[in-house]
Image (cartoon, rainbow, N blue to C red):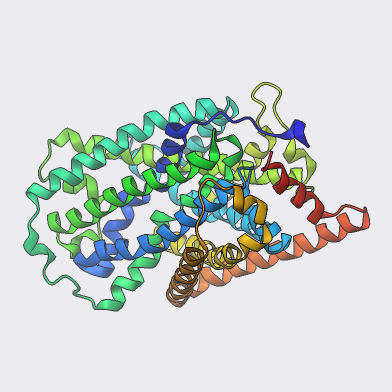
Length: 450
């Protein structure tokens, strides 16, 4: 298996740019306006609430990434600490995320592209960005990271200009009353708002390719969370103080319109370009991380062996990259509202959040040597605090999300059921051929100690 290991090519700065670009997607340019129509000026409170489970995700990811710096560490961790089936479901959830999550970004990219090219076909643009990013990733992860760094720098700069500048031109009277639709509206908005925070766990998927992972993964998560939380708070506080919340819910590109109130007209084009880049960076990481998950499961015999193929030129999984884009293209064919997509995606993330919280409590006993050697280590009390908070919030968010979007939630649960059927059939096949999945995963975990 050693010849199938991926090389550590990503430093701290590259990891930060990858994660920031993944978390801060096009949704921040679209979703706050729609959620303001639900929660009113208190939309920033909804984002603060959504940040709480994100903090728990960061702590869990920092711990897992520090002790298991392998490809798809989320899958390996859950498989070894709990059961391989639960680990498999994490990757299956990620695959569903490609189908229902990437269309949000691809069509968001197309919608903002209409600012520059209004006559271009929306579907063609969505497909085009997927193929473009596939080519970039096939050139190698270093090319992908460099592209990511350039795009993230541009859109983060524009977001800060808008957020900080907007503070000086805001009409704070527009924030009164703060909660016009009641407290429940804020909680209802917090569930899809969590979609904007949902990308932190992806850093552990590429852990095998990060230099000095035991230190750089926790640092990456800390730096990224500070950047993301600052930007989200600024944007969601300023937007309803520039445009009445009743109007925000009906505007397709709220930040572009709001920027025209206090910035030069040309800056609306910069905001639009930033939304394009933000969507592209999130799609880029979605494709990248999904390919690593597919690669890891193929390496462990759960997925077809062809997905474990490594390019001779880049030494990276090219077949898995192609599959990730094919699944994304299939998802683009699904038409829906962004809030429905976001809520559906979050259902899977929250379901698995409960599983990860339970796995965290078993970590010290299940992997005692890994835990003892970890550079980043949550003590026993902190582990239980993080796990309990994560479970309580995840269950509460799940209740709200399923109640508000029962149709998409049931479809999602049905797709999880299909994953369960596939795993059962595949595991039976491996058993009949004398292959122990538990032994393979234990070997994978033990390699992280070397």
